[in-house]
Image (tube, rainbow over all chains, first blue to last red; front, side):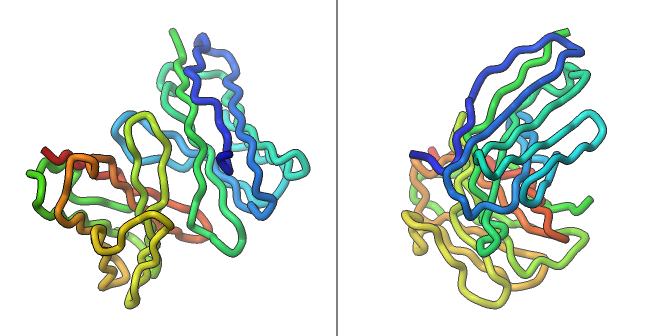
Length: 112
Length: 113
């Protein structure tokens, strides 16, 4: 069983819709949770970073962490075709900062 | 934001040759850098942790004699794939952290013929 599970998609949504992404994990030691966006043949770009449980909002992006359920989410409001990419969740423990465990990545397609 | 660069962005080499990939932190000092590998349609897998001035630490299953890592300065880490084989063809990405955020380089696509 993988430490981090993420549905690879693809997830297709119409422009303007809310994109809902999530990951589950098994390691209760994870404390840092991140969402990255990756375009084809490019390096991942950090979108959101959350420490421990709670919600965080930045523009059109909202990240949620529920440590009791070992479940994290990313919501993208008012989606645009330029949001079409692969979204990766990543996480690490306090004693292994920087050594990220990634989900498989979810491919998102926003259609005009 | 912080910038991490990699060179080259794309390299093709013959089987049996060695290839060096550079990772630079452009606007901050990085005592630690991380090297990841990503196969097509798969996620990133951590290969090793590069420590400035000391030996790298490798993840289980990664051959340290095949993937040589050197972190000679606070802004540069290099990964050398020695005696490359076609199965080493992959997307290699480095990262470093600054103020508790991990920033990734643009990646190097290696194709071994």
